[in-house]
Image (tube, rainbow, N blue to C red; front, side, top):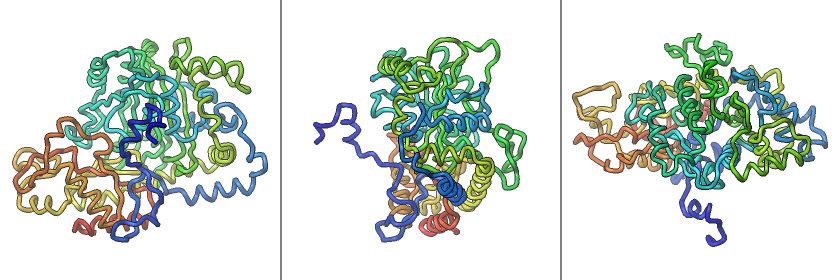
Length: 521
């Protein structure tokens, strides 16, 4: 059967790719000891689903008619949905340039959007820079159909093995971008830089200065800047504090100044820097911030540079865009890139979920309340989980905007705690000098995630290693006895825990983790 596969997919099919999703949500999945499994691994948001269900039900009851059983209208998405999406982006993403419906394309999920975008701007064999750590799904969605090569960028400021959690993402990306670019056999084939902001798995924001500098670097080399912003509107908010998006810097949060999320659409350049603005693509969707991952609604927004001239697209996409300019049904005044994306994705759109439900959601008077309610509940659930992490004495990355937290839970392994109690080693990031660090390894992380949490406790979490946290220098770090102060691999032992789940599920998950590790619950 493998001979029937194309050369593009044959290598991927030969590998065992572990999906980030599970067949069921919180019930019906059985662990090896027949304990019902809790899914704290998948980055789904359940916190406003009751309210969303009521709204969707009302839309169906009041507006569903036979027309929604037909093919959808419009090019790049339902015209009314394009208008509503442009209005939403202008309201919540604080764009420098007003986003027009012509700049927007609706796709079947953010993953397909990224796939179609890469297909549109890259030819087979081209290279794409991507900031690491990153979501493992990019290894498929950016590569499978396009045949491009990913070049991970391990900047020190994004390396949890080198940088304290509170300082992650604050440093410049340019030195490492330049090194990767110049190491390419043919730098002219480096076509894009992909940045995930808010970051997955860190749940933190890149400062505007870092984004701007990376954008200017891209512009100087005619490289497309792609910003994956699927968690953009999940900034954590204290209960009772209303945050208008983009004004978070005036608020206090967790005793620290709340860092605002800055979209690639809102990064400003001086009047003399217009030549330093690259092609910019932003990807968002309803899966994370609006808890509707099953609807598969992705949003593409194109920020064109101020200079005149068409967007750079791949050779295969250019001919399709030209043909669409004359043959597409009622095409809008779109750029070659948005025209190409519309061609690739419009036929996949389900009419009911886009033209009725999502358009109804985006135009609902309750939308601002839903965004605020989601942020408030994210904060409440995070504070609950964070309290236990602090009680257990395990390091974690303070979340700014995400439904999950990255924590070095392997520091709570019984053998590690026993060694620490005897004064041998430490797991405290603030500790300097004195005792040798504890010898945490990738094997410890695997034992924690698979044997203890999954098989014994029935709790699914995401291992940090799957986010490409491993470096080549880590390969020489072997398993060791913590009691002998073995070398500590600071990139090992981390897990990502999703807290945007129903409160009883979160409390049960915390209790199970505490029980299997012998911690205070």
